[in-house]
Image: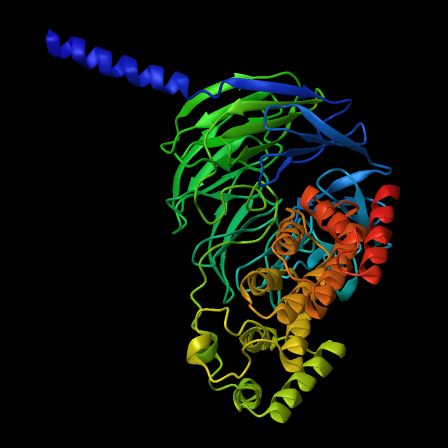
Amino acid sequence: MKKKILYFIICLLFLLNCVSASSEQLWRFITGGRIRSYPAIAQDGTVYLLSDDRFLYSLTAKGEQKWRFFLEERLGDCFTIGQDSTLYIGYKSGELFALHGYGKKIWGFNTGQTIMYSPVQRRDGTLLLVTEEGTLFAISHTGILKWKYELDSAPSSSPVLDTDGTLYVPLKEGSLLALESWGEKKWQIPVTGAPTTPAIAQDGTIYIGTDKGLFYAISPLPKIRWTISGSSSFLSGVIGEDNTIYTPTRNGIVYAILPNGEIKWTVPLKGSIPGTCAVGENGTVYAGTNASIVYGIDPLGRIQWEIPIKGEITNIVLSPLKILYVGSSDWTLYAFEAEKPAKSPWPLYLHDARHSGRSARYYAFSTIESHYKDNFDFMYLKTLIQSGDPELIEEALNEIEDRINKNEVKASRQYIFYLLEKIAGFGITEDDFYTNYPFRGYSQLREKACVLYTEVGGLEASLLLLRVFKNEKDIRMRSVAMHCLGLLKSDPDGSISNMIAAALQTDAVVNSSSVSFAAQAVSTLKSIAEYQGALTRDGLRALLTIARGKYGAEAKTKAWEVLNILGKK
């Protein structure tokens, strides 16, 4: 009898646990129109929401409005948060524009074509955007066209980016196109139907569904590994921590598929499914239907709970703060208690809550030295740079500069970036003490290398430049790093402005070097202020320190010019 009572209590506790995991509603936020596309979540938990009332809303994780931005034209589903926290939104009429996290437009780029899908962003900040007319645009993080590529047909969904730089573009004609990071075709493989946005597994396998009811696993060789047939269109898939693929069909069936192509289970839901599922860290699969029901499905394929809401569900997103966001046609964004996204290769639509579309999988790549040891060009440039002869080193830098100017840094970008880092970061990066590069402190060659490093690396160069600025003892070299950071213009978290302010506060002696440093500080802060429209509190304090005249009349005048610019913003 006692065993039966104990068994009953255990079962009851299990059921109560399931109920407690049923995603209690935390809050809801009502807009003036249908929730348009997947909400995007910034690293600090801020929720960005597009509504058919033509406003972009910025909300706290508690559902409180921070600001809203009026959208002048009609939208597609082009909406993402960049790695520097900049918002990128596309109008159907063809303009892609950048918005700062506090609601001010930074720049706009007019493609002259129809924008429907979200861009993806490379590590250097380059945005890769496809249009309905079939053009792929590569646009810098500052809104400048770098290059474009004409596709064979219109895209059918958003492209995604693999860790090795390969861009996968689904095409309406019925194929998946793979491009090199510089816009050169690698391969193209036909499929039956128009593909959905791909998901990328840990081993590089690409998973796509099509509107003809087929789901594909394609190796990056490329080769079709397996195919599954369904009773309706397959939508984009997500991947759990055990590498199970979860993908819904339009008619309301969620599939769980093992990496070998075996169907683990299927779960029919009430109503059709408008978009991709999400998978949590405990294996819960979240899905919503147009029957106004949110579902939680456990890893065994059992429906744990279902929650009715008002209106048809348009999309769902899982936040790292353990919140499930559900958009609805009743003009409302709902927030429910949930799990964090799974620590898997692809847990959400477009990979993450920012909609980056970029894989973070581990890529088994040997060191640059071993990978390119048989590459003549790499060995040629390396020999010149390691020679220790200033003339030969300058020859290598001039060669690299010429390639940059002619847009010829393509397949060589990876090792050129590496070689420039050796000069720019000498004495800063961990292995520099074991090299023969004669670049400790300041030199004109190192200054040139830093500038070239910034041009090749874009936003990817910022981490090393910050380290040089913080750790380099030679104030002239710190000024060079500050100049290069100013070329990038982006300072979303204020780290550059704050480091400049801290450096000025510790500068007790005014001499020619510190005067030059202060002048460069003003130039860098001006670049950031003009681009972003604002500076951090510490950035303003830095300008005020210089504006008091401590570093001479010229720096003082320039500081006041920047303060006046900010006053007009």
